[in-house]
Amino acid sequence: MENTKLKSATFVQPFSTVQSERYIVENQEDLKAFFKAFPENKIYLGKVLKEDVERGKIILLTETTMSGFSSYCYETILGDRAISEVHPTSFIRVTN
Image (cartoon, rainbow, N blue to C red; front, side):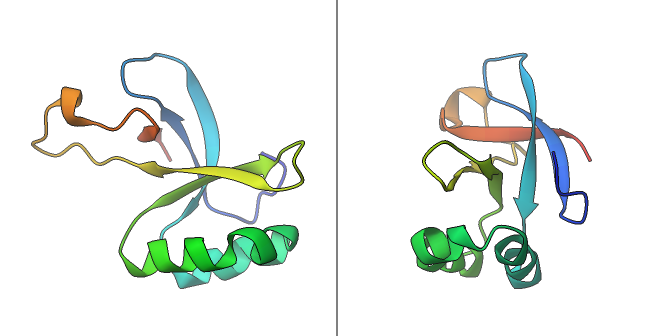
């Protein structure tokens, strides 16, 4: 990950062993820092990401892609849920 000032962690998709790093947005401060580092995303993703953070979702974002914007998904916290209930586009944190 290029921007070391943002929160990041290593994640794995459910039913996979492939690990990847993602930026983590857990609150409004994280979101502001992400938009400061990647301002092009504020126009395209700003409203959606703000609403998701307000709902308590943990958002995982990539560097800017070929489209000019970051892609994103959500962290799944398993707790007592079965792995089979996890949404395929979610990720599970394996390291901080």
